[in-house]
Length: 260
Image 1 (tube, helix red, strand yellow):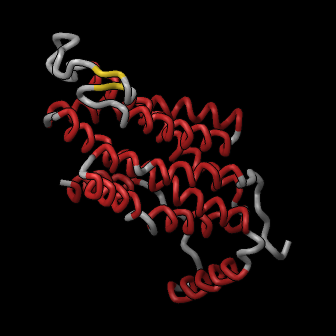
Image 2 (tube, rainbow, N blue to C red):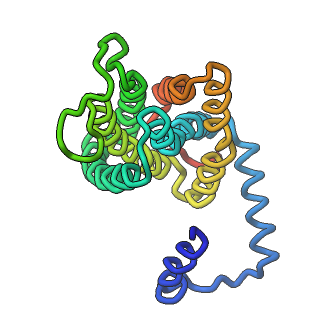
């Protein structure tokens, strides 16, 4: 299903989107020149220390954000017993919340800067994660015990108070995480050297996938070790906190080439 979806919705890009002008270089020349430029950039890493710090910080907190997107529904299914219809409603509404978050995040990014927007997104997501894992069928906010299974309304889904609170908490997740994804890209554009922006976005894409295994590994390890989905999902806060702290030391200033 994913392959068919990808094929169908990529066709408009391939069929109707105009391409840039053909370069005069051959493929071999382009690859050779590209590798030389990458090596030159790697050798000048000390000059690009601020960008390098950002890429590492983003790599870490991005794993945490992606991990929450992946496992928040799994956590709900295991903790509250949500069925396929519940998860479908959950996914659709969360997508709408994410769209709202993208608009709000755009205003924050424009007015306060990308770094502030990223810090708000990552810090807010960490706080929401602490709240989210506090919600259990028989308790909320860790210390408040409630009678499990008591419906608070007649709607056939999300009937108990912890379920409703988790659902609402996850809508905020969707907003904050979307801001994090969007503003992280804007931040990359703002601090990259204008002449090397394509190259740096290549490194940006690589850093976003090189450690993609860390979040699932953390969740799997802590879930198995403590025999608790709560512990597994909560482990992602480590990635968010580390990435947040590193982001504090990133400067929102555009880098220049060493020869300038």
